[in-house]
Length: 285
Ligand SMILES: Cc1cc2nc3c(=O)[nH]c(=O)nc-3n(C[C@H](O)[C@H](O)[C@H](O)COP(=O)(O)OP(=O)(O)OC[C@H]3O[C@@H](n4cnc5c(N)ncnc54)[C@H](O)[C@@H]3O)c2cc1C
Ligand code: FES
Image (cartoon, rainbow, N blue to C red; front, side, top):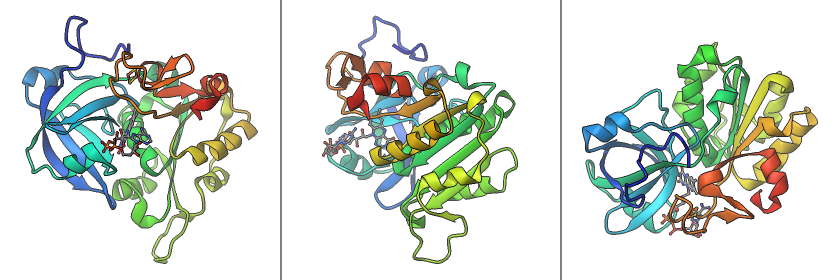
């Protein structure tokens, strides 16, 4: 289990900690950013995590589901989850009133290996909802700017109205300490000022040295295929390519077997895998 996990071994790992939704920020259609705070001061102070980890969020009386943490551990106190409304739990979550009680257990998963990433260039490549876990890493890197060399974000959405965190990312375009490349597949509005084209077209707009860069990728499955092609074409070492991969999960703690791919538990060994893992577990991507 991850060493960023807060709980001692004699605690019931399935017991959610009481928390409240303190603010809901609409993003795009059927996607909202939920700001959540634990009820107990002790949990607020002790909850630490790594970018790339996830929590199990429970909606009382409905059930629970895993969500990547979108906020950064550099800004403690509030946990941010960017959620797409898709089914049972998320439909109930979207109907909750302000200040509603929810349950949180976690953090779970390995998260990004920050000790390895620090001192290197960081290339973040996201598509759609893949920006949710990568926003945590991006904010972490920007809040610890001196620990990283170049920070490059490549993010693609289907169209401008589908771009998550659009306004905060547009602000980054002007910022000198990050290269923020945003693209949309199509722009019918004619108002979009950044790039148009699939996310891989952004590779032509950045200089990337594969020898001192870690790439972190998260997005739809089809995007992985083409982004991996670009990275391998640029001679990226397979252990410098990190992917955030999702599988159906139930327990989140390596007990139920729902998330198993080959011999790996996605909830314990992942959700962050390097490209070597993907080659050894072909059904992973
Ligand atoms: C590690 C991890 C991190 C995640 N992070 C986020 C996040 O940041 N934001 C977010 O919106 N969602 C995230 N998800 C996906 C989220 O957990 C599911 O969408 C959630 O379970 C939906 O619950 P539900 O009860 O609303 O939908 P359900 O009623 O359970 O399911 C609705 C439909 O979605 C399918 N489904 C459920 N889970 C998945 C999955 N993981 N992959 C593909 N299809 C699935 C079901 O098969 C079903 O067809 C993450 C999943 C994992 C495993
Ligand atoms: S979700 Fe139960 S073993 Fe991973």
